[in-house]
Length: 435
Image (cartoon, rainbow, N blue to C red; front, top):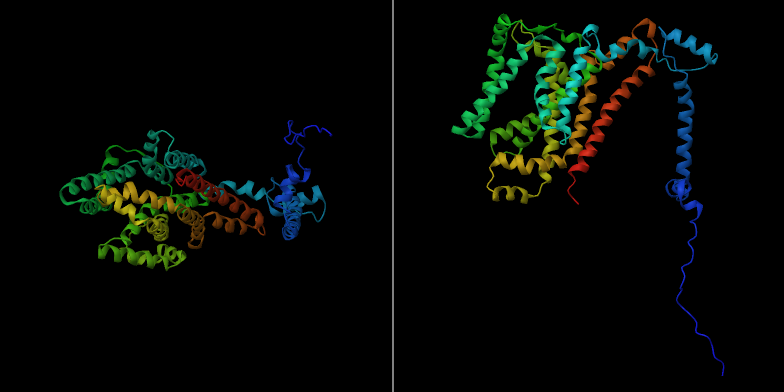
């Protein structure tokens, strides 16, 4: 009888790990998984690479052969021909070098460039605590001051004018609180707004003139017609965004209100403004509005454009916010009622924060569209960046130059719009509570 040795079926020593195939890891693995996972994707990748190569091979030499110092388009072409031979092409960036300050500030006096620069810095400091809540809350004082100090720096004049405008808000808030305690919140808001409007229309001007005659404090005034370039676009865009957002909230709430008159007015305003092109409203602000004003009345053209841009954007903003309100489940409203909150407390603490979070993509899209729509003001005679491009092209020295000017304007607009888009993504991630 044969005796067999026991056979072990369990491995006592682990086998050494083998390296993965070279085509499944590293750069080759990424290319295989993302660019050539199957036949169709591989063909599309090759076609896309061919298109990119064709664009880059034509665009890159044009960019690298660019000229930054020249006094005219003809001089640019001569320099390019001397450097790279006859028939060579290159960008004439000299037009940006020569007309940079005009593209930025328009006809604004050069010795006063420090004022819009300071206003822009204050604007960044003012919006920083609003966009990022981890900054010191004391910076909100700058946020409150920017709407009054910024316009004063841009337009100049008496320092008492923005102070009187600020006092209008103080008067409105005080009247609102006083009347609201006796007659309710809604009546307090209406009376407070009326008190502020009466102060701004009839009393603030004489008060500012009186104080100015006693304590003269002013800086050199600048007419609105001297505004231009990206300074004008940023001014219109920031003003429209800041003013259309709260107005859009009130219009959205008014459209959902149970008060028939308020709801009808909100619906009528939204539907009318959304049904009219922005360029039509700008023509109304530029031309037709003067026919409805008393003879001799002066209404600043930029202020008129700001009003039209604001109401146009507010109508779209209201619908975006209404979409966020409609997306909230009914239980949120019932929870607010169960906690004993009144209408405004429920909106401020429960409803509106959730609705705005839902509507962030739509709201930011409207902001981006509004900022780009500021280029339409060139049609009514304001020298925004597109208006300045046309003025520069009309000059004999730069007649015929196209891509460099429009490319520069597009690049600057892209920086602003891309920044707004990235911030909206950051805000969505920060407010995401699904986890």
